[in-house]
Image 1 (cartoon, rainbow, N blue to C red):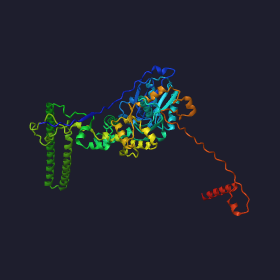
Image 2 (cartoon, one colour; image 1 turned 180 degrees about the vertical axis):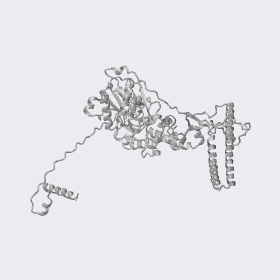
Image 3 (cartoon, rainbow, N blue to C red; image 1 turned 90 degrees about the vertical axis):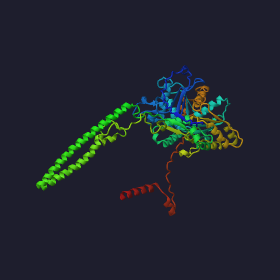
Image 4 (cartoon, rainbow, N blue to C red; image 1 turned 90 degrees about the horizontal axis):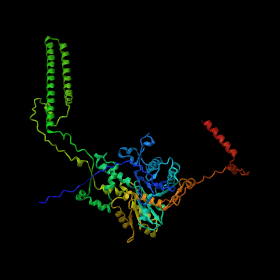
Length: 600
């Protein structure tokens, strides 16, 4: 007879990755030349990446989370940045970021980030940085935020040149260069990061900022949603479902369903559930209380408990005998008073005997509670019967088995069954409504953006649909976008969807490539002289930058002095009555003041 095969469970453990502090690198020799090599900083809301633009094989040397932790009242030097914090969860309430969604607003934290980057890249110049800086910024970055960033870099660090660019456009530029696509590039970029997602149309190598779209749904919303689902599902493990573990679940165990409704129907099958559910094992202690005690020690402990119980019962019996003897003596004395005819003394002593009896009853109940506490060690189950019988024989106690089986499996109790949550949380990018967000999903917003162009322009844009950003790393993302585009576009229309080679890092690589091809001082760079002449919000445009729309200052109109009215002599009474003269105005104001004084 063939035995049935047991289902194969997928049990995973949380890695609980702990970061180590970033090393301090030696500056390369090219950075000390008269034409210093630029420093490229991908200033992301989830992770910061920094390094030198030296050669095409150069990788970012620093990768750390964009968070800082400093206790209230602590010195500036005691601030922990990124990888200096080995475990984020104990300090979660202290963490601060320079971002509000995807825009830099806290420039005190941003300055700490720059200090960390420059110090660990080996820049030891005091009070200044002599290398050009390439910094990424958000699409359609507010002018005030760029002005504060330029002021920080030029005034605080005295950098010679600064260039700003959009991270997803740098990634688009880098991948088009790798695929040998001839410029000018035309396409549409779907970018999703930690706080926001963007749809950025690019026409003839220039970013069309008028028709771009931003959605406030990205990785942080998916992580928060997954954390709430698991905490509601496992209320006994609230503290164990931390944000760091939830992010690990999203990055390592989630996926995008090509057809969301069909995939949910598959999860209704018990066989599919048992095969696809991921059991996440939480750390726990497998020690059973008393499990390491030998049989001889157990018997010796029980014998000591029995001896202590017998001593307690013997002491209680002696004390009760003494109390009964004392009460009997009092009653005998009361009886003698009654026989002698001393009724007054008889009633008084009888009342005292009754009060003593009530006190004795109360004291017996209190002694029963206090005497049990004299046991130094907790009793085993079933030993308490010896309190009722002092002559309870030791040999009649039942033997306990040497190995006690637990009521439930401790390892299984500390497991999180992650089933449909694997696809429900990433689905927020396409359907944000489960979290209460009243906004379009990614593909609905893409359709809205495409509708703003002519059919010929739409054909050119969808021929190069580019996916980038850390939130695009889910398996099945490209297939889902292709399926949605197939349903969206006209019958037999052509389109092409391309995923970035490294969605999370290509922004830095694109900025590095751009810096290598455009030396400092040329197109796309802002010099200190231009900063002083044109203001901090000035932007030198290039193929991966925002559009520069100068701030229009409306000059206030100067108020014209009031012209004195001219009284024209007329013979009619109404016209004379409608003329207001300064003398009449002053007299009216004087009368009003007099009336107010009288009223007061």
